Image (cartoon, rainbow, N blue to C red; front, side, top):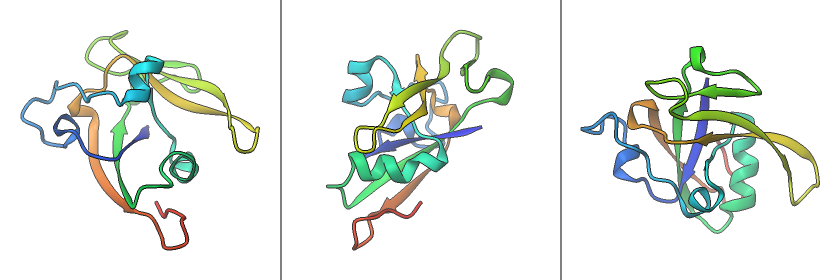
Length: 132
């Protein structure tokens, strides 16, 4: 299963092929304050970009591989070498712009470099939309 982490700048630890595959991808400010990595499923990326990155010209989207043998959807799964090191959890979220309730993937714990499949650069379209 692949989930997506959006960055305005790519930390070295998130670059695929980093010298240390066990390097921890740093959390952004909102991740630190909330205690988990904010992620999106593919179908949620465009909405996340519109809600939180409308002022950006471009962003970097990390494709994060969640090992299928350690993922239980939509409940709780594990990511990392040892069960329990980190967990993927689908949390209920009420969207502020529409009031709709949906589920977003969050990782509690760490994302390691070895789980980053690739980084994709995505540019905002002239009309303010994003194509991903």
